[in-house]
Length: 436
Image 1 (cartoon, rainbow, N blue to C red):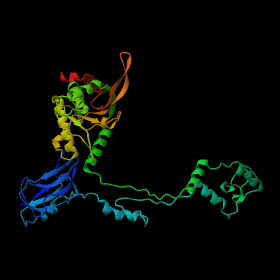
Image 2: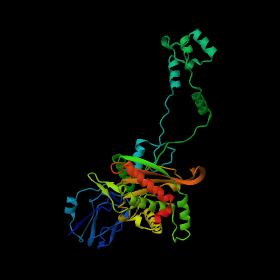
Image 3: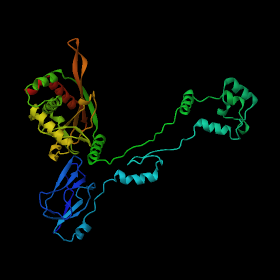
Image 4: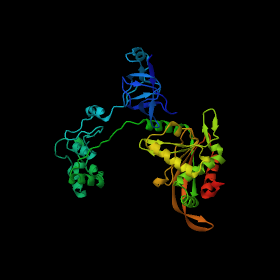
């Protein structure tokens, strides 16, 4: 008997999936364990495994199409089996992906045709709106409404000549638009800058240029980022705490550790370890808002934001407080490589209890980050930069790093967030404390 294959939910936040490619075609014999297709979710591109033995009788969504979770994507059964009943009863949830640039170009050209000499370009729209009359041109038209002769009183002409005023720019208030003395005396000439711009426009050769833009379909990952972070920003009452941390000892310790470590330890690895230990000492910040209850996590899983081509993904270093710096360094590198190649598995980007976003490598001094649900906090890390500091009444140069903690005020109060930063500062400024 034929069986329907529906789009599975491949991550906790997935609502729809895009069929990147089918690895089997209609008529192929398939067995459990075969890979039917590659599916793009909001987190990564994953393989769709088959669990039914038989023949692929029907593909319900072509490559490039997107469907909601639980919608029909294929039917497997015996060769020659009648599947019309399944097709008629199945809920039609398939939604084709947005048209590609080549398909949408004809429709765009109907609405705003491009000039004949413009080269066609996929998904690019150009605007050649006619130039509107300037206020000065409208005034001139009004003064010349009765022909080219400007109607003005002799006294008005005399005053205009004395003041060097062009009567063609003066609006008349007399009969039939006749210019009188008071019109000339109250006339305010156009700004010199406008006249200069007009003169320059006439003097310079014309510039051949057109406004244009390119549109691309929104990826499943970008849709998920937009949905989750918009929800976080608008539902979680954020507040922010910023602290400066002297990184001299941490940087010196890293240099010394790398002389003995088999893997290169980064400043970010040290920050992950310090944050994990700080959460162990301040468990109230390692929490989540669940609507009718607050979850205080006993385990510490640190999400590390990684920028990839499609957006942002947060691989998770689980039980980070129990791992060595070398272990954390190796794991972070492996997770980052998987993230950039879209090979992360759901268990590698789910389960975070706290998130770190580090833009220090880009030279960013400080910034605020949006909380990554279900966490109650996220730490934004800036660059460590040489700064003049006062120590024991003397001025010295130190490597100072600014961190900003974003907190969900429904769960974490100012005192809890502050205590977490105080502990983090103490550990980073005295890294030997992380060993005891």
